[in-house]
Amino acid sequence: MGGAAIEMNALTIFGLFAVTAMLIFYALEKRSSWFVLAFSFSCLLGSAYGFLQGAWPFGLLEAAWAVVAARRWWLLKNFNR
Image 1 (cartoon, rainbow, N blue to C red):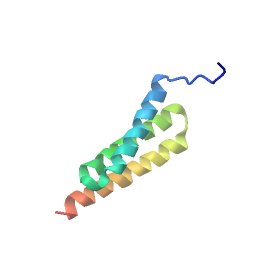
Image 2 (cartoon, rainbow, N blue to C red):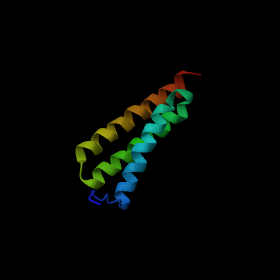
Image 3 (cartoon, rainbow, N blue to C red):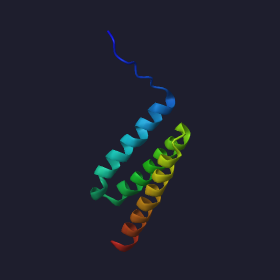
């Protein structure tokens, strides 16, 4: 039938899960500060995926986003009471 086969190994599935979680939690951030924290955690998963696949610039940037989001969560929890 002529199409390229898509190989879905464990690393690819992990990466798909990580970036899907990032998208979902980012979209839900305005509903609760806990979604900001979940976004931060999913950025850490995305960072791990980047390093595991050998794309270290992606891994570094996702780690930076995780820190930014964690700080945002901390500020929301401590100053929006």
